[in-house]
Length: 89
Image (cartoon, rainbow, N blue to C red; front, side, top):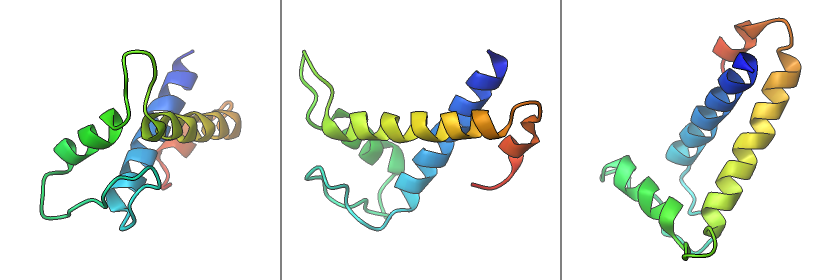
């Protein structure tokens, strides 16, 4: 269980860094990140874009799909060895 949590957190921050470093706008109709403005507020807009009372927005869904895919790959690759979690992306 602990290994799965570490893999999820690792993947979450890797995908978050990919979003932060991206120079392209997400395909969900959002504007590209403005590097001169604080990232946190812009990321919040990304995560809330398209949300309704009954469904999540497309960006949020795709973001967590990427996180889960990466977390599963890290977990599989790191069975018996958590050192891989501290190596680069």
